Image (tube, rainbow, N blue to C red; front, side, top):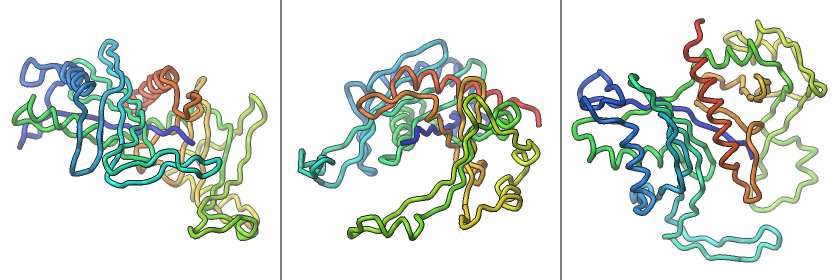
Length: 305
């Protein structure tokens, strides 16, 4: 399962004002870093229960290093009873009640520089729940009491310079041509149940070990790289809908979705993390991967076109 990260800028401003506060001097003296630390500490013993969304959030662990807070929060949805079954024999191992939440560990990193009006939030994304929404709901619940008359806003981070930097300095190691759906000749051999069989098909080419593909930079940096490649390269009997390109930047692998490069702020760090026996990325590898991603985003945001 891919490990995906969402990136957002957090800002604080007074209601009805367009001017944002310097985050280490909100209301002239309050440090946003201290507020976040106090909130996460409070949520270790007193979890946040968003009754309207039927979702809980609580702090598993966190640490503060200089102006960075990082750690894990547990987020889980509730509201529907279900059976938890063993995938080996489909036997019921637990009956989940309406008030039971499957709390998933979600890694986050919040970078709050001095003298700036924006913080950088990097948070793990998952299909099981809306982690960013839950995290921001938790912060806003405590924020309204700490900062009366102020609002907390988040905006997606997707600097064009990040992608340009990847393509200009990175080496392309893998290209995947993706078609939504499964070919008919494949579905014929699959066992069909009551649900529609869904999936996608990939046609992948990989560079030799320690090698790379010298793809023309003019194509990758064009406004519509997917369209240009589709015009140039046709795969017989395979009408692909998208192309994903994996590039190596230094020691890190970054996967870029050419059809969606300007859409959602999602970064694929799968190749940069290790997965533990419980199926979750290890804390240490997530810490290192997100620290590098923060550097990439900062460099991309400051890059000149």
